[in-house]
Image: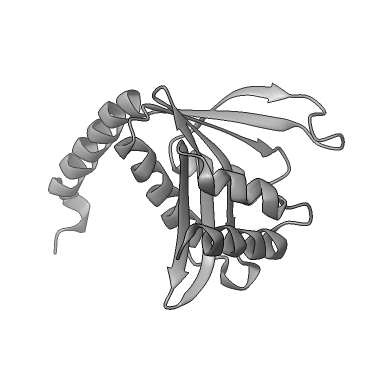
Length: 165
């Protein structure tokens, strides 16, 4: 896809995913921005999800992530977020930030599973809802993910005596 097609694809997904989506001109600007990171999740030939944001001075900010309503509940949000984080890391990001509506339980759960930590609340940010600010520090999480992996490996090597047959 060329940049114009990417912007149009993001716009179509925005309309499908959100009642108040970004404008086409705002998305065109993001596609042209050299600091932008854009992931379009495809199933075959069909764009079904996306994430975009920026990386500046070692910090990434996720502006938007969405999965088309017909394709939700299949883990595509987690895959798309993972791809976005990986691309940002390749561009030098060590910290990630995002904000989300406090009532968006599926998104909040996704970010918690991805080891984001809530660092602030902006009361009334959306008028009828608060914004939760999340952060993920790659350096801190690498150590904690390795420790978690080591712990799971050790648990897997233990055989509970009561289950031997």
